[in-house]
Image 1 (cartoon, rainbow, N blue to C red):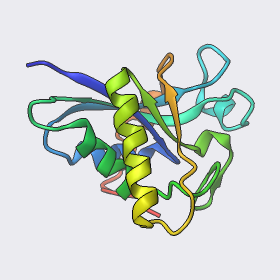
Image 2: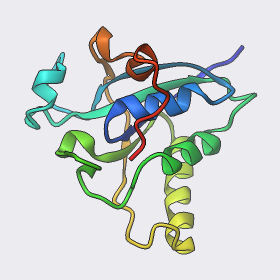
Image 3: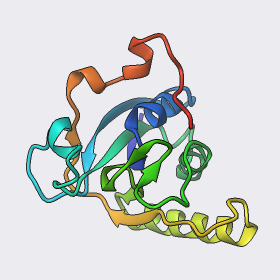
Length: 158
């Protein structure tokens, strides 16, 4: 089976990971950090806002069962892409809305998706989601992986 990878920042990584884990065609998920300037970031360091990293979920999926556009739909449905550096009560650059593309097709799909959402007026405000090349993915500490499932929860949607 061919597998592809997609990476999204949608505020706190626990909720978005839980959402993706429920989608048929998702093979695996991992939460971590991307987009910063420091090597080997930790949760404690990322929370200071000084590493430049965003909390992200990296999704491994089967493209024969699930399209990248489907993954984008889950992304848009599970956070507010109109708030800069904030999701619900979480504030800081580490909670920014971001699509980290792994190839040109993902970049074009993300940009097209934003244009379509803007034209639809669905969110009522401008989308501030950044579309940025994927960089090093730093897995978060083990206790963050599948955090909500470990606690018997399925979502922390805002």
